[in-house]
Length: 398
Ligand code: CTP
Image (tube, rainbow, N blue to C red):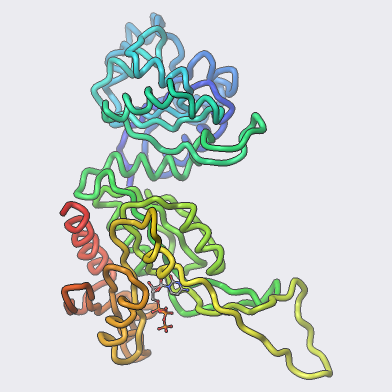
């Protein structure tokens, strides 16, 4: 996904700087080249040696460094990359950027650059919520700077709230989205995928035959169209696509919590084959054979994630797309399902064993919307995904 891309990574002074080391590795795993810049404050948290060793190249620290000025120069350094990423972006760095200061290497690079910039802010919650930082964030957004995070959570300083730096995985997804030019650029889309596992006891579970192939293909197609994708997947047989933010879950209830945490989003695609039921009281010990007879499992209903999101009063994604796995009366059942759940579209497919669709590489779907049912010819799951991504892009643009 990021093969051949060049990232200039500015590491600011914050406790979250250690996560930037992991970010370097993750970027390289995706084929990107990373040129690191460490601010003076950043060097209080991570050492230049660890940064350069991981990046496999020298770390830039000084504005007036004769060697690099003769060699490259800070102006050229600021323009040689495809993207400038600041992680952690401190309140101070944001203030400097918003005001156009250029009094050290990082701020000078950020002012001299003509390439896109992405910030991963990290600071104390009060600092993030301070009117000065709010103003600076708005100014920077107006200057087309994009943001990954910050997240909400407990912080190193002991307080709780927004200000925690986004995880490397999330920053990676934001980088991929920012570097991909496509009709979904700037859109955040969540995708659920794969089966869920519902525990019976610590070693046994109830599952289904979903491979996660269609959901992964949808996530990949959305990402290739420029969207920032949060991919919430149960234990699937296929690997998640590159460039998306992966949230791995096991059960339906974990999936629901992950979906809620990933909102707000511009669209949601619910391709997961979520188990409708779970074992009401899963045992925390392995069930043993007993002379008293066979164990009896009682079931409880799982939350319907698609329905819950479709019927949200506030914060509902602008477009909610469900899937319907049916074995008979596909269009009638799926049309009724769309109404019952309240989603905008349903991608219906026939999963009866003879079709080879569940677990296979092809799909034959009917797209059901308010306007009726549109039958698509049988095609590869990748092609279904690309076609769906095109439709989603058109809907979100309209
Ligand atoms: N879905 C969900 N949460 C559930 C069950 C289903 O989000 N607990 C979503 C699926 O991801 C899919 C859609 O709802 O997008 C339809 O799933 P499907 O299994 O076809 O329908 P069910 O609601 O399970 O209905 P039924 O089993 O009666 O066909």
